[in-house]
Length: 135
Image (tube, rainbow, N blue to C red; front, side, top):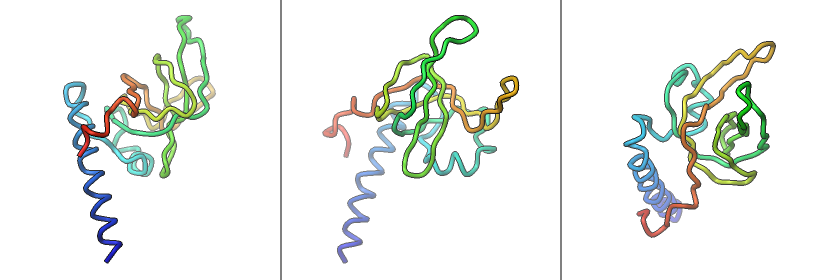
């Protein structure tokens, strides 16, 4: 019986978070919050579409693009997978963020081929949301 209680509590918490986050992004795009596992397992479905994912920032690199402007490349990871993200918005290792951007399953850059990449339009810190607003 305790497992039903834990599942019930987990579902009660998770559903309002997803609804709340989807509500926040509704004016920005018609994308829904995706599980990282779904995106990584079926990249062809989301290719060149706007996606919204949540994860932890890892391996941040500052690069200067061809126009001479700073660009940040990093990995966005959760328990189920990892995506590459390119952004003009500065982030730091360990940040918990919500990323909205255009997903590309395969991009050719000269001799380099990049798989499962999001070109971020917006990045919001997950800690900016107050827990009393959720559920």
